[in-house]
Amino acid sequence: MNVFGVDIGGSGIKGAPVDLTRGDLAQARHKVLTPQPATPDDVAGRVVEVVSHFGWSGPIGVTFPGVVTGSTIRTAANVDKRWIGVDAGKLLGDRLGGLPVTVLNDADAAGIAEMSFGAGRGREGTVILLTLGTGIGSALFRGGVLVPNTELGHLELKGHDAEKRASSKAREDEDLSWEHWATRRLQKYLAHVEMLFSPELFIIGGGVSRKAEKFLPLIEDIRAEIVPAQLQNNAGIVGAAMAARVGSSPFGAGAG
Image (tube, rainbow, N blue to C red; front, top):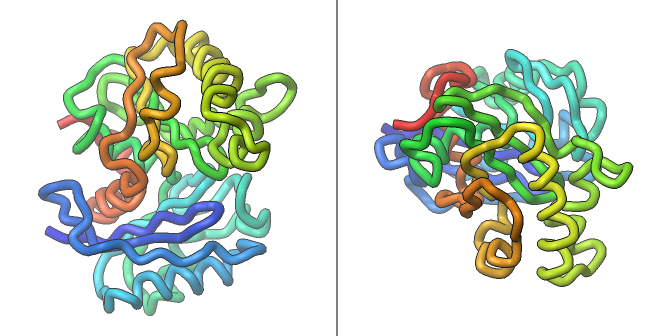
């Protein structure tokens, strides 16, 4: 069964039909740049472009980099603040000619995909997925059940939002070596999150997960197991499609 997933990020918007029997893309994804500024109307236009590329007509799941309740956007850290208060499901559904659209937090989408098809499959206890990209997204699971909209990238670290110091973008913007970023930024962030939640497993997602061998072996003094996301940067698309299949954010989705 194929369902369409779209992943809205701070730098790119990508989507594809997803085979939900395998938890993988049914076709190669199509990606466009996130408009700057990333206003609701401009982003909606790019989402239409991605969906139209495949001639898709059916349910669509869409991730958003911020807190989502129902289909209304509550925060917008790495996109235009005009998103706050917008019913994204209605906006996108209208722009897509009335197609049913389900909206959920981007890291939550990646998390439910990894818990069902990837690195978290079959894992109980407390599991935290962190997406390291333009910012830091988080998905918290207890006993396979999602606690939505945790937004742990905004925990304070050295007087700043943690994502301003430990995201993949921070490493690139400050031209940090993998060692410096891993041992002085990411490790301290993981230690802070571990102190608060004592997870058994950290799953590291986002585009940087493709280069896990460059930084994960450098991280020490973390009790939890740390593994890269198996679905890598496609996890958000898969999770969005999973949400669209049931017509709501699948907060109870987990291992299985």
